[in-house]
Image (cartoon, rainbow, N blue to C red; front, side):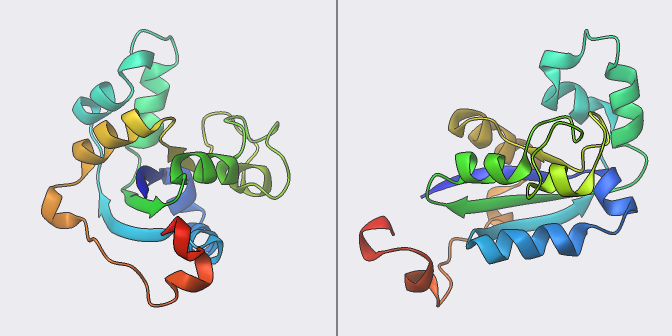
Length: 153
């Protein structure tokens, strides 16, 4: 099984959407193997969004991501990067399909409630950026055979 990083952004925290997002993660059958609240700063955002640092909107991104703490999660599951990104929807909430997190809960390209790793390789890098090894737990819920077939575990 693979892992992915999820960040519940300030727009999710301030709008009290944490429970709804976690509920959907759990209902889908994804395993939360790490979760914590933290305050991001410009240093970690420059590293995390290195591909966007030169964009004119980067200062606005930093401002929006530091307005309050975020919740970072490590999820585990079969094809979890692809599964969670499909749950997330398009970056711009106005274009995200109904039924996705962004399609149901946002109308902005920037205040889009959640970050999701875009590849297995980037997920490994991002998880290591936000979690120490002892903050992640390797466990299988008791109902794992109700979520996956035996050959998928």
